[in-house]
Length: 81
Image (cartoon, rainbow, N blue to C red; front, side, top):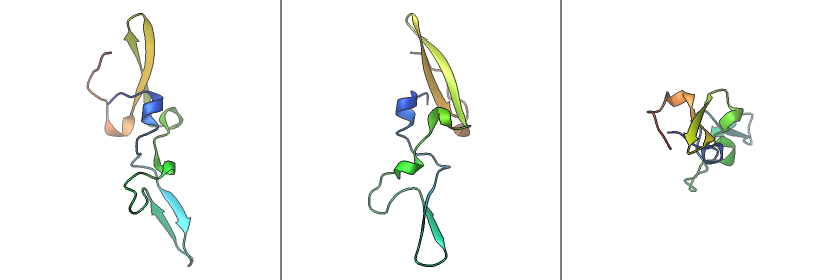
């Protein structure tokens, strides 16, 4: 799926984890808080700040629009605007 950077940054990243220390010497890593059903803000896509982000330039009428996708999932089917 091709996305703008703004839209990509609202999507959950399966590689990201948020951690916190418990009362003991152990820590816990999560990707969403129990009961919220929403990803932890620290577990969202970083878009162009991520090494897996792949940028794509598309033509929309007479201008170039930069979109991208997560390289972890493979190259998306060809899309046009």
